[in-house]
Length: 160
Length: 54
Length: 67
Image (cartoon, rainbow over all chains, first blue to last red):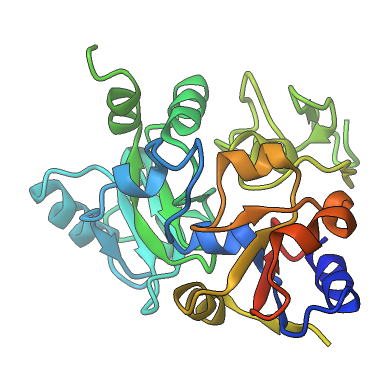
């Protein structure tokens, strides 16, 4: 749509025309501000926990489990050195054999969601699908944080 | 059923056969949804006609 | 020829006071748009561009994504 608009504007005599081809989706995925009726609604990126523990593929599951449980977590996001999400260890995966490598125990390629998704939608889906937590990432797959169902729900229904 | 004899689910929004739910990735999800419908529902994409390979 | 730009250049144009135009339908524009952008749906461009835009200033157009 925008290329056609750009060319048409030029044909109408507009001398300096630019086409931001990646568009609004790219802008919002980068967490940049927007205006409009949705702009003030809380989004996944704000509610996600930025301090979620992370680990690498080649770590031993046992030591990762011990570390994260000490920190009071029962979920860990597996990332590479670029912080790109490679897998997820939720409570079920963390119960696996201690001698396994993380890459053997993890849930590979988990579903991830963008920072700009509205929290009402995430809460609805997380409850309906009984999903405890889900990684929130940038459009190039880098971890922003872990969204917990309980945080999403309490943001939508703060009085409950 | 697919070629491997596994029962396919159907997207609860568009009825397209899918192997697993795009949201929770569980093969036995009670309200499975396909990637396209999920992206539209979450505002990660605009509605488009979509087809699947199954 | 219109120039394709990326997000960093879009931000620079926004800060530099360029005219921002979202060409999606108005319902999409109402929900979220780039700061300061006006709505000029593609179907109305011919009729409304003249009155809404200054042809002597840079214009940046955008829609939803690259698709």
